[in-house]
Amino acid sequence: MSAWWTYRLSDILPFSPQTYYRLFELHNPAVWPAQLLAFAAGLAILALLISRPPWAGRTIALLLAATWAFVAWSYFHVRYAPLNWAAVYSAYAFAAEALLLVLSGALGRITFATPWPLAAKTGSGIVLFALFLQPLIGPLFGRSWSGVELFGIAPDPTVLATLGVLLAAERMRWELLAIPLTWCAVTGATLWAMSSPEALLMPATGLLALALALSRSLRKA
Amino acid sequence: MTLSRRSLLASLAALGGSVLLGRRAGFAQAAPLTKPMPSSGEALPLIGFGSWITFNVGEDPVARDACAEVMGAFFAEGGRMIDSSPMYGSAQEVIGYGLAKLGHPPALFAADKVWIGSGDEGLAQIEESRAHWGIPRFDLLQVHNLLAWEEHLETLFAMKAAGKLRYVGITTSHGRRHKEFEAIMREHPLDFVQLTYNIVDREVEQRLLPLAHEKAIAVIANRPFQQGALIRDLQGQALPSWAAEIGTRNWAEFLLKFIVSHQAVTCAIPATSKVAHMRENMAAARDPLPDEAMRRRMIAYVEEI
Image (cartoon, rainbow over all chains, first blue to last red; front, side, top):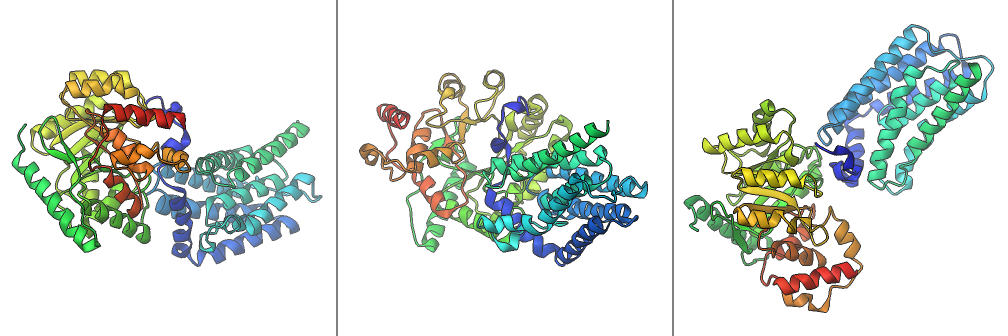
């Protein structure tokens, strides 16, 4: 496609908002009861963030990796790719993040400090939001309950919870932040092109995470 | 110009299908107005339909049935040309689903595109598209947005020469790459071009439409409603009192009649996922059409709004 930069995103988005939201209505029953496992994983992550035992980092990394891998396969590859050829790249990116999380967990690169700094509190708050409040946004704007976007099942809350965990960690791991931050921009642009009322949520949270991560890195430098 | 046996049969089938399906649906319409394709004389209804966005519904069984219903209404109204592309997600498969559900209406004029960066992979992509549609061959294949056009045109002309394809074309949209488009139109024996033309986007009136007329190339007008934006902008506005003179009862008919009344335009391909809108669109392919003076009046009215 020549001069691709002259296209607006709405010119190249190949589906309607109705079809996009319907995707989640079809996805949820197709993967049931994975929602229960994902929610349990989310609660476990939250509990580990608060209690911070020495093995918390490894366990959280593995739980997050499992959700990223599941979203890569079940949502992007199986559900979204037939609608959008670009979804296959998202599937690869989510699979790559899953791999990075496994490696980081295995190498003990995700740890949590005993005193709870502000960034850790903010991070835990973001996880809490992703688990309990973000799924309510769709129904709040009049969309079907059957299409709720849940942590571990849909990409946005999975990414947001991951950003929360990374902010709560003792040290910033930029290699783990890159894909979630990129996704915040991608999903924000997609929702913006569809005139979705919550289009700014993910980019705004991504920017907040980036600002906190930068300020922490600069303070330590 | 003479009608080929196949085109005559297709036209009769369209008429027959229209009457048959029309009765079943409880409405019977006169056959839509047609124009002859310059390269063959085959008659094509002034309104076809595009599948960008509206038919990309994936595996959703409810939405697939709704699309099949729209296709049924299209054929019932005497429609023939359906246009798609490998770029349109699942649209080709959804069209294939609809065609199978409707028993493969013989009136179908299947138009698709080749859209891949490598010329070597063109044939494989075309075969995949054909399998999605579930048809023996395409009537028209176009090089989508001039992507790798030199290689793909070679493939398409070879297919046409081998009797595996009836017509060859190229496409552009959003007013892009018109200079290159014009050069290809001058140098290659194209049957069709597809470009953006509507009451607001009229750049093609300057060079491309006159050239198509001169070179006897059929023209498909895409983005007739600017992906719905024109309809949305005009919806709250009253139609002019003189709209009745050209038999328009709504903005869709008004906008489409403007497009297809250009002498170089063969058909317009609005996309919709609603049966009611499909019928409104098809109504634009009925007399009377605006003459040149009326067309200028239509432009002035819309520009004033």
